[in-house]
Amino acid sequence: MNEIDWFELLICILFASFGGVVKKLVDVEKTKNKKKISVGQYISSSLISLFVGMIMYFIAKNYNMPIFLIMSLTSVTGFLGTPAIYIATDWLLKKFKKRIIEPNDEVK
Image (cartoon, rainbow, N blue to C red; front, side, top):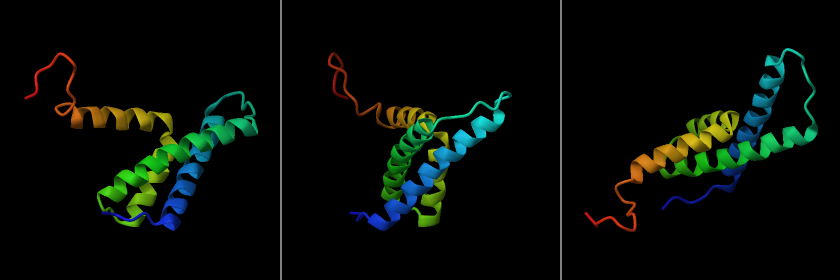
């Protein structure tokens, strides 16, 4: 069983959080009116990214990926934010659909 390296996890979620802030900055640059974004919006984006990055860390750690790849994946998923949750949900549902038994289905 994989042990959690708390320092690695901290570094990865910081990368993920930074990815969320970068995404918010990119969004600001894309807007034509350059509307200012509040500190609360940056914090919100950072927290969502932190959560998504932490999930990616645990998934990647389960597959024994190298730490630099894990850091990259957590950064990218942090940048993606909420869409990364939807992508992961779709992947998990496809992967485990055969194992999920609906109440009226037979066990195969």
